[in-house]
Every structure is written in structure tokens, then in C-alpha cells.
Length: 144
Image (cartoon, rainbow, N blue to C red):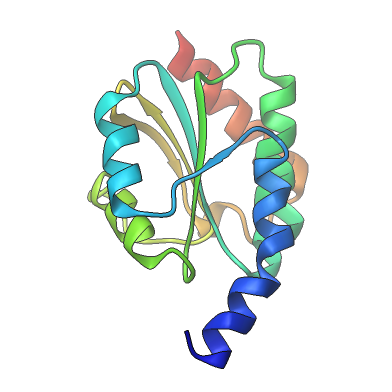
């Protein structure tokens, strides 16, 4: 591993922990993504994590709070990290081919099918509470 990659892997540790300590499972390989997407039943909340400020100040806090507030909790909480786990992120995006790649972004998947997608354009520039409420509503709608 070159010095740049080693540095970047180290710097994202707290960004990863912010989600994993809230119950999200990291999918770091294309195989893990395929396993999850092929076998998970029910509602999955998927966050394509990122190193950017809108992930730190908006997306990660919004998904954590949305899960806490949702009446119907997602069955699965998973994350891939754009720019870090490149193969896993590319594979996850294959399941959302109808939407352009975006990071950070948030997807609600029901029985392996995309039910709702919140791209960066609906995260950056919004208040965290607006993003949280959009995620919570998407979770609730998918649970019905």
C-alpha cells in the first residue's frame, strides 16, 4: 500500500466508526455487497459514505437519527465507503443503475429492489433535520 492510500485509510476510521457504532455493517468487498443484496429480505438502509463535509455534517447524522426515530426500523443497516472501498461501492451502485452515482447518498432497498434514493443533491445544502425526515419517511414507506 502506498503512503497516500495508507494515510487515507487511517483518516477515515472515525468516519467509518460513526456508522458502525450505530449498528451499520460495513460491506467492504464486492462479494459482501452481492451477498447482502442477494439474500437480504425486508428493508435495508444503505448509505454510500464519503469523506466530504456533507457526509459528516448531514448524511451520517441524518441516517443515525432517522433510524432512531423511525417507527418501523429497517431490517438491515449497511454502508459502503466511496473512494475507499472502491469495488464494494461500484458493486452497490450496480444495484441502483437507474440513478447516477452520488456520494454521499442514501438508499432504501426493499427485498433487493430500490425503493427510494436520496442523492447528494438532496443532502448538500439542506438542513440535517430535512435529510433526516426524508430518510425516516422513506424507511416508513418501504416498511408498509
